Image 1 (cartoon, rainbow, N blue to C red):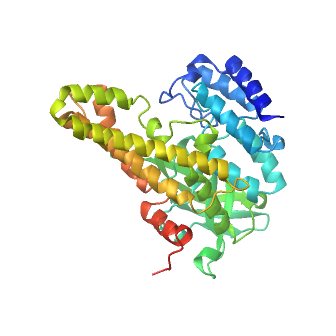
Image 2: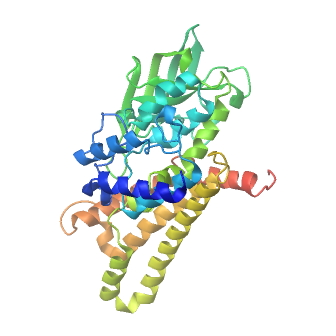
Image 3: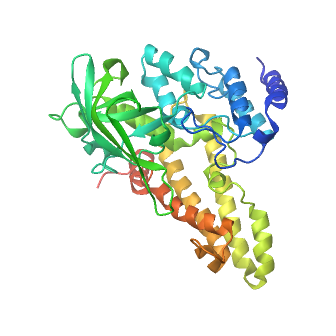
Length: 399
């Protein structure tokens, strides 16, 4: 179909099918990340999901056979633009779309793709990530969770930590050690299994801000069928690295027309212009300093989004490269700098934790500021990203 014709068709369909409440900024608790263990508080979210999934537009570039729409790059870009034009919310988020789905397209068997991808695209399943362990964080390849070959299945024992959303997940993609006699990178396999399997225990971890988005997950004699091994036994490291590139690229957010990106998601109602006017009127003597700080963060935010969009337009065969580490590093610094700027503008009112003298917004933002510190660790620490950039992007020698 010609691009102009596709744009007109998409525009008409979106105008007719996107509910009014799905054309507003996301409200915490209303998002849909798959599965039914954590439900959206807005019924319109499921109307929007069902309609978009019916079009194949929750995963628009995936093949139609797997729940996508098979859009080519030009059509995909048009769809993003039209979704952004009406300020549409993402119909679906989560690790299924952004991480394991794209990875299975590349490394999964036909049976694995047919079994898992359509359910991801329809939002029927929520996924979590079993990578880090108590003694294997940034040095992920040192993981010790074992998977013993039992003929037609593996027997998995061990634990994972920082498993985001594990208490709400239906399935997990998990790195396990299947060979202890070879170098650590060569004895790792990549498994998929249900979080409802006997022997899986999830314990949320309470953070400094009072929330518990992360968990420690324990595996005690969990049986995993051999057909849930992705790629080949002892060659899971290559799959794990590709998945991380999908995660760090940030392109999944653009695919859902999330023009604001993580900076706005962490503080959806922030209006930098309104903040500037408010604090300029209160502290006129500091106005050049305030104006400079707000403008700097806003410019970095805009540059980041434009660079993401360029990467989306230029990506080759939908396979992200080492440059995704740049997105991960810059994103982490931008999220932190935006929240720090907001707190700085509030002065002593930014220090409230509980009690009188602070409004709900001030208390919320102080907790978010603490929570945001973890973004420079989660999904690969800043130090790891800088090493990857130095070696794989800039071509600098080791040592």
